[in-house]
Length: 317
Image 1 (cartoon, one colour):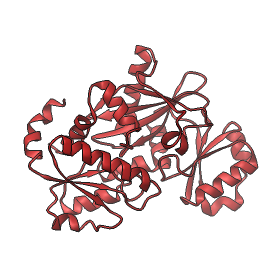
Image 2 (image 1 turned 45 degrees about the vertical axis):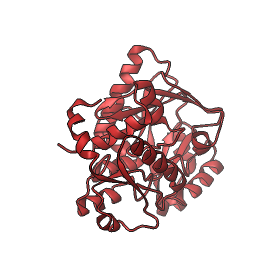
Image 3 (image 1 turned 90 degrees about the horizontal axis):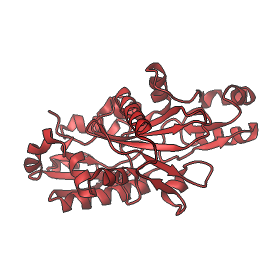
Image 4 (image 1 turned 60 degrees about the vertical axis):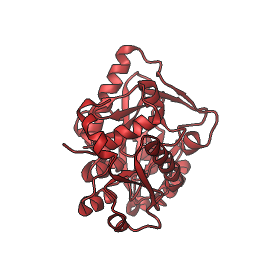
């Protein structure tokens, strides 16, 4: 347990907690599952919980329903990008996770990559493409500059939505067209040929790393939420030194974007054995197959204890 927050637990259980989930983003389906799981976990811990789908219920209803505190379970736009956080600040309702700045910077893949680079946090070479410039791009030069193979990522989407790999001009053109359907700005990242890991951050502490393995080309939406062939290794199989290094790097990246409370940092290791930070997630998935609960379990926290600690972290001292 996080001892500094233990004394707040009794008073927290006197409050009415709203779990905000659903919403209108491309990650709505995942958010619905996360919200239901979180609400169940909080109820099992003895909290008074109200589930609210922000797609159908205006935020002003939080005041009418006399909500004391919010657990944010909204993934993607509108919930993870600072918009919801700003609205809750205006309403004066405390909430879980990162504040407005930390949420917006972490959600924006382009800005977070720029921050990693400025802070000397290892991350793969990249370039940024704007939709307005698409017609004038030299796709051949982009591919050459980034090593002949790239990962294409919409700047502000999560769950690998709109992502694709490309190693030919035709593939890159098609991937960009697809990505521009989600965002006007797209991140092109040099392909990383190596294993992928993720590290959960909880109250300033890094939980055990998880190593993800998939037979698919990369850890995409299907590998995350639909495939039965994806394997998760926790403990990760790293030696003690590498485990310590990836945890320290994850905390550094988490802090660099201004993230707070809880979250998850995704990292890969290239063929030269070098760590490459991918991104910071400030509202990670919390479904039965999600990564944060897996790491928490190995750390010694069941799901109910995990969501309780996340809620406790919303008490700013």
